[in-house]
Length: 576
Image (tube, rainbow, N blue to C red):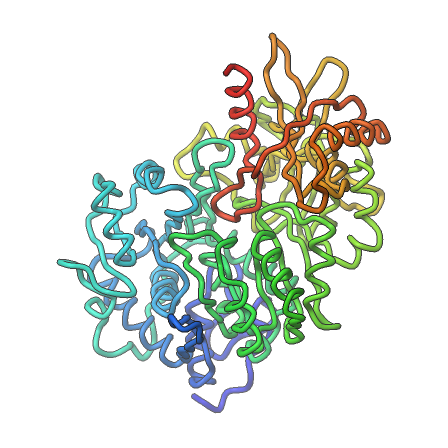
C-alpha cells in the first residue's frame, strides 16, 4: 500500500483517492487520514509544542500512521459501546493528538460533534448550552470533567463520559475504548448529506449562544472552500498552526501538518498567549499558514517589531473574529517575509468564511476610504458565495421573494447563500425563523446581522452590526463608519460607538481607549475629536466622548468590542 502515487488535491471531487470514493457532500476527513497513512505513514500529522518553566520549548511529533491506527481502533470501540451515526457527543478537548484521534474517529462513525468552549462561553453558560442540545456522550479533559461535576453540565442527558488527554477518577480513557487491532477496512458511516456533522455554538454576543447545525454537506463544502481559497494543495506543503479550537481541521483535511502552539486553549483567550513562544514555534517548525484573532496578531507583531524578528516561512496569515484595522495589516506585513500576506476573513459561526480581502489591497486602496467614514471593506464573496443587500429589519423574513435587493452602494442588511452555510439551528424554530430566509429552490439565505453595501466591484463594505446602529431623529450612526475615523487621532488606541438612553431618547456616545502617544488633557483631546467629526458625513453631529481605561472585548477572540456591555455601563454611570 505504500507504493501509491502522491495524493491529488483533497478538496475537489475531480479525482479518486486510491480505492476510496470521493463524496464531497459528506465529511471524509477519516478517509483522507487513512489514505495518507497508507501512502505516507511517516508523514507528520501533528507537532505539539509545550513550554518548560525555563522558557525552552519541547516538541512532540506524531505521524499519520499513528493517528489513523488509533482513530480506526477508537471508531470500532465507539461502535461497540453504542456510539454511532447521529449520536450527540460533547467535544471539550483543545488541540492535541488525542483531539485529532477523537475527531477523526467521530467523523468515521458519523457521530455529531457538539463543540462548546467553556472559556469563551463562560462556565455557567455551558450548562444551558448542553441542556439546549442534550448530548448523550461527554468527551473532555480532566479539567472539563472537574467543571462538569462542579456545575452539573449535561446532568440530564449524558449517559456516557470519557476523559481525554489525561485521567480522571472513575472514568475510562480513549485507550480503554480502543479495540486491539484496527479493521483492515473501516466501516463507512451510514449518513446522508443532510445529517448533522457538527453543532457549533455562536459567541453569544447578542444573547444566548445559538446551536448552529453544520450538516454533512455544509461541513464538507466548508472544508473544500477553505482548502481551495487558502491554496492548501498537497499535504506535503501544508504546515498550519491553529490558534483557535477545532481549527486543526484545516491542516488535517489537507493531509498536512498541524502545529499546536504553546497556548492555554481552555482557561485563557488568544490575547493572553506568549508571543515570544509562538514566534519561536513558527520559526522552528517552518509554519506556512495560520489563523489568528486580531488581538493575538497585535501582540505577535509588536513583539516581532521590538525584537526585529521576521517569520519568512509564513505565506498566509488569516485573521478573523473581529474587524482588522489598517495599522494591524501594516504591522503584520512588517513581520512577514516578502512572500507572506495577511488576509482578513469575514463571516460568522453559521457562515465561515464568506469574504476575504488581502492586506495589500487594504493598505493601498480601501483603508483610506475607511478612515473617511465609508465603512470597512471585507472584499468579495468567495467562490460559490452569493451576497445580497436587503432593507434592514428586526422582523423575520419568511421568503427571499418577500424582500427586494437594494442597488449598488445603498446600505442595508447583509444576507448570504452558499452550500457551506448552516441552514438552521438545533431544534430552534424561533432563532431559525429570525435568522434564515427560505428560497423557492429549497436553499437558505443567512442573515448576518450586519449592515453594509456592495460596491461596483462586488466588494462588501460593512457598517457594523444592525443592532449596534445608533438611530437618532435626524441620522443613523454606524460603528464601522465612525470608529475608524475617531481612531485616526493619535491619542486614540481604539473607539466604540454606543447608544445611551437619555431622557426618553437615544444619544450616540463614542467611548475611547487612549493610546499613550498623547498625554494631553482629556478636554483638549475631546475638543479636537469634536472638530474632526465635522469633516465627514458619517460622523457629523457626534459630540459626546467618554474616556475609558479599557474597552471590554469578547472572550472568544479578545478583539470584538462588547458594545452592549459598554452601553449598559454608561447608562448605569449616568443614573449614578
